[in-house]
Image (tube, rainbow, N blue to C red; front, side, top):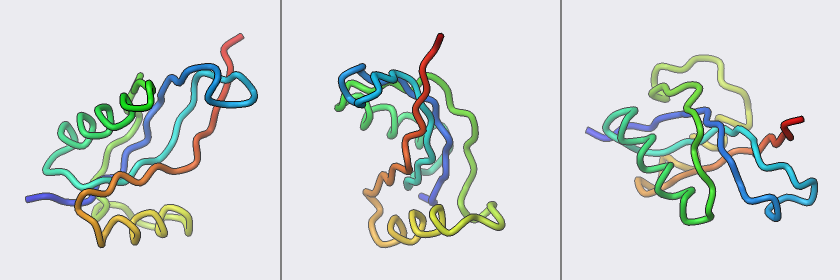
Length: 98
């Protein structure tokens, strides 16, 4: 059975993708999957189409197990509920390694 999943992922991106030249960042992602492993694989395959790479999955939870999500995350969840093919990417929080 597929369910909505929320993952927080760390990813690497090409330096030309952001004006700051940052190549690392993290973001929330909402998608449908039957397991955390499937959600991770689905997101990794999608991001690879942009030459982005998942470095680490910091958190992975079924949406139904979450409580007190903020307004932005709730809006992402609602957008995904109507489309079982959805992969909703949140704000990319970039950083540089010194």
